[in-house]
Amino acid sequence: RQDMFLIGSHSQLRRWLSFRFCEMTGRECEYVMLTSDTTEADLKARRELRTSSTNGSSPGSLSIVWFDQAVVRAAIHGRVLILEGIEKAERNVLPVLNNLLENREMQLEDGRFLVAPQRFDVLMSEQHNLGNLKLVRVHESFRVIALGVPSPPFPGNPLDPPLRSRFQAR
Image (cartoon, rainbow, N blue to C red):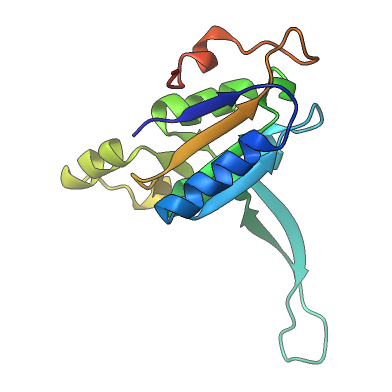
């Protein structure tokens, strides 16, 4: 029950193995392709403006609606998150991923805060007034499979040691 990092040369084999693993274990998955343009907002939630009509015929006011991205959906619903191209992630994205891997925590732009299942359960058992904190429990079945190529010799950023230590190696 640990996150995995599949490393190898450029090919589709790692991705195929990840999807096959999910298929064989009966697990749903979410897939994210990381690039040098990926920001931490791309990993968390997307904000849209929606028009709400008051009586059905005339336009009403604009409201902001948040949509969870694949990383957040996987964490909340206990899916396997497949992160491909982790060596391409920029330095500002790596701390967000590291905190999710190590502590199972993430601050979301809409004010919610993802909390590890054990910590969430302790807080709820102590019956703290948590209603206004917008805490969201990360599912205990949430797992991450990261896919990457060794850098060097391939182009990309070498993984920083804190992030690299989060994965099981065989």
